Image: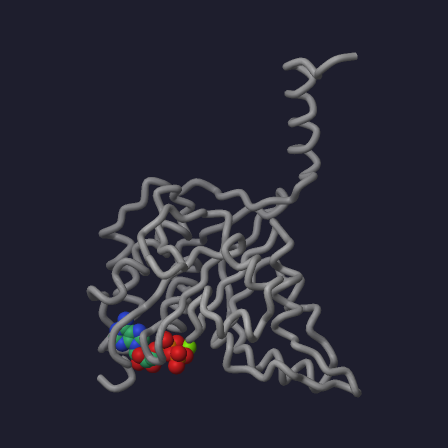
Length: 241
Ligand SMILES: Nc1ncnc2c1ncn2[C@@H]1O[C@H](COP(=O)(O)OP(=O)(O)OP(=O)(O)O)[C@@H](O)[C@H]1O
Ligand SMILES: [Mg+2]
């Protein structure tokens, strides 16, 4: 029979695309981004919430590239999670991981960007179906509390888009009816194998820090780079300003 010819290759590709054989994330195009307009929308949302809200040198890179990410702009950049922390191309099909010390504005950044996408009605196609690109956000310790009360964690694993705050502050040893479990590890491992889900995370633990591997294990650690674009927020604790 020999190799498949070009027409057959085209047919195979069309078959797979039409049926979403490898379910994936597709962006609806909103490019080019008017960055000046976007940043003034963000400042308006932020100062509505707290008059002290500022975009400054500590957070501008993260906000600007979050804007590119929500708009599906392939020019988006992030930083390398290894020690070099160099600026690298982002991937709009992946989620977001923001690390940084307490009070640097990680949770606010993810919250405000979700309000921004609601305001602009930004959508995303997951396995061919339109979803609003917006997220509420669950604290990692609240996910554990729910597991300890009900035994449920699968609903967090399955959500097409999820935002988990304060990853790393939760107990890694949750107990439900005699079952001990590292719930966040199970959720992240599940999501790490999917190409049709978006995971946003804020954490005090850098993504490639030994503490991360100690808490969630090698299987999760090795999936993180594929799952998320990485950012770090630096600077002072903004709660003290
Ligand atoms: N861009 C900003 N400009 C000014 N103040 C801000 C900004 N972002 C956040 N803040 C203030 O800093 C406080 C802490 O922000 P946030 O809760 O996002 O920090 P965090 O990095 O998530 O901290 P933690 O690691 O403790 O969860 C907020 O309550 C808010 O008052
Ligand atoms: Mg936080």
